[in-house]
Image (cartoon, rainbow, N blue to C red; front, side, top):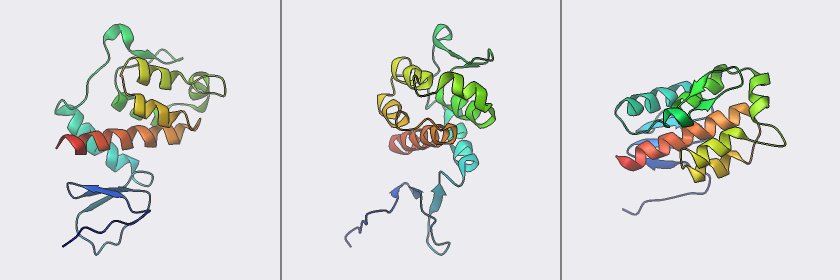
Length: 142
């Protein structure tokens, strides 16, 4: 039987569908709407981070937030974005610069993610794109 694909449908790998659209509960598999369930995605990513799927930046290249907090990987950045104040975020991301993009591109060597983050200056969008990127990375290594 040929696999049907349709524009607008999410990508399905290993029984997990990554999408912006809700899925009927009658269908099989796990549906993860990254925008509606970032906490669920964060748990999946955390579990895989603990298995060693993601690397930390060397101590001398950790990202230091304006409040002095240190971030050593994408998982910590996604978590920090969840609790970060708007003022701290705007010190790093504004119309003139995006420190997170520079760090992700130059230190973590994740150029694709860095390019996607350039499209928005919204804190929530950054978190969603980071979690989506990490989830795709997990699914592509299984």
